[in-house]
Image (tube, rainbow, N blue to C red; front, side, top):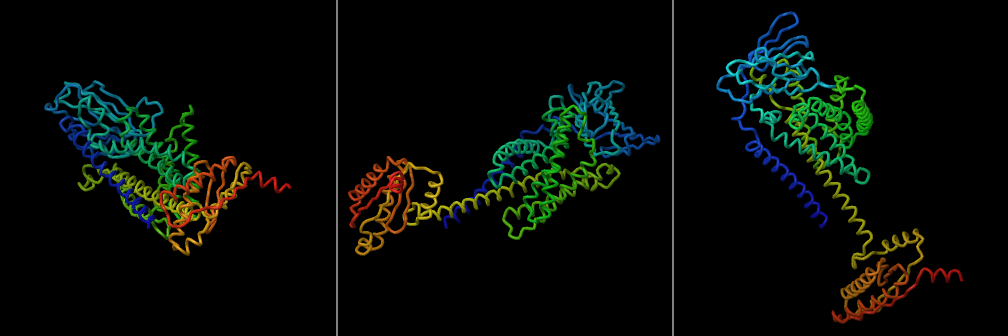
Amino acid sequence: MRNRLFNFKLNNSIVHVLVIFFVALFLLYCFFGLKGAVSKDHFHRLSKMTVEVKHEDGTVDIFKSNLFNYTGKKDKLTIHLPLEENLKAEYQSINFFFYSSVVKAYYKDQLLASYGENVDRHMIGHLRIFIPVPIEAYGDEIRIEIQPTMNFMEDNFHFPVLMSMNDALFFPILGVETSFAFFYMVLIGSYIGLIILACLYFTQDYAKEGFWLMLLINGIVSWYMGNSGMIYASASNENFNAVVEYIGMYMLFFSAPLYASYETSRPIVKKYLTYSGRFLCGVFVLCLVLYLLPTGYSFVTYLRLAQGIQIIMVFSSLISLLFPGKQAKKRGDYIMQYGMIFVAVFGLLEQIRIMFASRITERCHPVLQWFTSTPFARFLIYSLLITFLTSYAFKVAYILEKTLEEKHLKILAYTDNLTSIGNRQYLQRKLDLLDNSHSTDYAVIFADINDLKYTNDHFGHGAGDRLIKIVASAIKDAVDSVGGFTGRNGGDEFLSVISPAGKVKGVAEKIRENLACVKESEHVPFPISLSLGIASYKEVEAELKL
């Protein structure tokens, strides 16, 4: 009954923690959405634009919105951004992201900004474009010339934003302040979790799975924050943003299968995930070392191969998590399985969105235009984090529950039910350990209750049980005061081991004093007396030699 009550309290505590987590997330959303965000009065989305895409053959495509595309890296893009007079203000800037290109901004023939030409070891990633707007440009236009370095657009182009230079620092997280704060906290929390679980890796059952889970979460969040440009809010450096994105992507290679290997019960799948995860972990370490050393290596050397491996490993892990092959499922397993359905749906939608984003233009149906601008990746990561953390919380609770149950059963196996001190098995275990330690400086007290049968016959077995408890309490109190152990050998017999042996007579005297105090204070109707025998190891050894 006590065990069931404890298990209920443990599971109830997990539910409370999760409720508090989601309430805190909601409050965080409210705070950053209402108070922490840049006021809508302080920025303006430049939705009016003309985009000219000049192809290699000399033909030109004209687009009137942010939904445009190009066919190759030899195309030249020119974006005309008209600035209305009513937007006129000093110290303003135009801000947007563009993927891996050479970007130059002009007011008439005056160069205002240039990006993507001389970036040291720059990898494919989002360029964070910041264009200072001269005061005379209002009523005219800013011209942006773009030379792609890729044969396709990685994603759709979002509206440029006109805002003050002071507020421009917050452009990378404009409209996603809550997500940025949440992901940043998750990123820091995952590092702390990695350190703690690494220390427990070889001592606790749940630590190994938890370690790879924290690494997986760290990789997912790092990849997304780099891919979305959120990292620019922490460090305005193109290389750093790209490194975070691709290190996160490479971490998914091995962390996803290694974590999934702990969730599946299928032997072949478990071996596949484990061995492939370990191999790819070695590949990741090698790539990281090559990048840190002055070798000139960059993570995009084999980018398409890496992306292919990522898709295979993440898809394999996802399938194994959806169908773990477990016969007896627990609450955490159900959370994982149903949560992964949402993850799979959002993941599929995001992959479709990325594949078709660069092909969706203003000429397409409005539903397709809405689809290409929907942040499925953000929903995917939220679903993933909530599923993983919730499932793992219940799994840890279950492991702790089983561990405590085992400890409780072990205590019951070595405890006398009546007196709550050690039983015969406990004494045998302790004596075996003492013998294996080859210790010689100890003594044994043999105690036998006098007149226990008389007490049972004349005062009832309840009185006999009370007598046994009184004697056990007196012996335990005396032994605990000097160090040693004691237990009920059975019936009316008790055995105590005292170390060092020189304290044994003091313990025997203390036992007699304790019993005398009970007689005087409780006025029990039955007799309380004890026969004691003392023997030390050295005395017995000397007799055996004779």
